[in-house]
Every structure is written in structure tokens, then in C-alpha cells.
Length: 107
Ligand code: FES
Image (tube, rainbow, N blue to C red; front, side, top):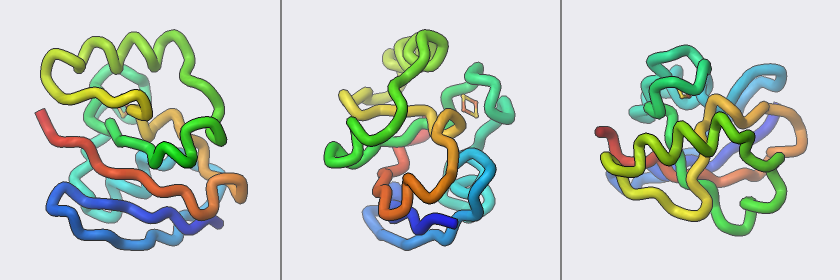
């Protein structure tokens, strides 16, 4: 279980209690944050894009080449930031308790 602080597209914030063992994308989608996760976590849609709080950027496992490539692919459609991540690639465990993410704009 982890508590994740979520900044919505409207600027509102909420704290989500997220069960461990899955991917953050699922919790964000189920909480109606606007994350769609259309591809189900296969790194082929980019609709799970979030901006990770810079304070957390180095505390998460680094991006894989495939994740970086998917982010690059959506970069022409939506603003990318140095802390852009695919939330389907953020595993939920106790180590992310306190994580803060902002939901990126839809495209
Ligand atoms: S759910 Fe499709 S890229 Fe993350």
C-alpha cells in the first residue's frame, strides 16, 4: 500500500491509497484522473503519461529504452518534461509511498 499524491489536469490534488503489486497507471485510471491506459500497459499508447515530482525523479527506477521511445513519440503531441514518465511503468510498492505525480494533458 502506498499513498500517492495526484495533481489533476484542473490543478486539484487528491491522495490515492494504492494497493501494492500493480502499476500506478491502473490506480490512476480507476480513480478517474483522466489517465486512460488504452494499451493496458504495453507502452504503445502514451495515455498514461504523468509528470513526476522532481524530488522523486531519482527515486524511481530509470526509464527503459522502450519507455523513453514511447515518450519521445508523444512529444510532438504533448509537453514533455525531464520527469515525464509512463505511469504503466511505475510499479506500486511501499517504496513509492509519498510519490507525487501530475497528470499530463490529454492528446
Ligand atoms: S498504458 Fe499505454 S503506454 Fe502506458
